[in-house]
Image (tube, rainbow, N blue to C red; front, side, top):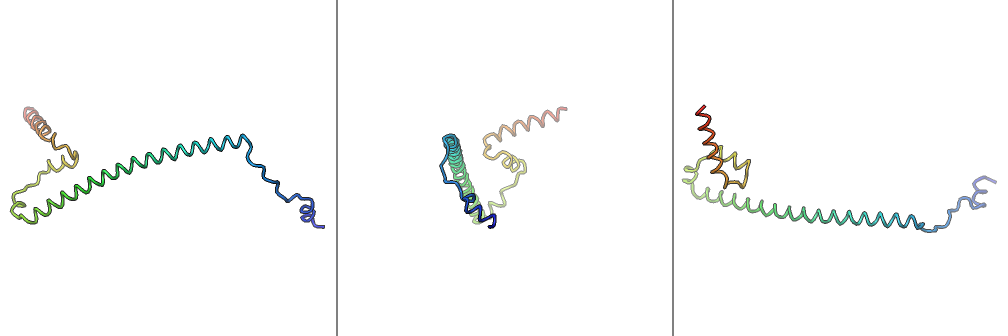
Length: 122
């Protein structure tokens, strides 16, 4: 007979019946499951925080868009207003670099004036 048939007849190719996990394997797997569940909870909490931040930023963007729309509408209605407004590179750059710090601008201009006076004194 062929060797493969001998192996089949002898039962060498039959898989052993499943006996389940050993106690050690069960402990390892439950420990692994607890660690993975903990990681999932941490990720969900981090995602919730990020979602809150995203919603706050979206609200800020919406407010900014509304402000821009109001400015555009007011300028389109009043052409004389465009003639009287001027552009200041210093104000623009400060607002660009430090948005929301308009309260501190007078102090900054005072400091700049003091620096200019100090430079002139040299």
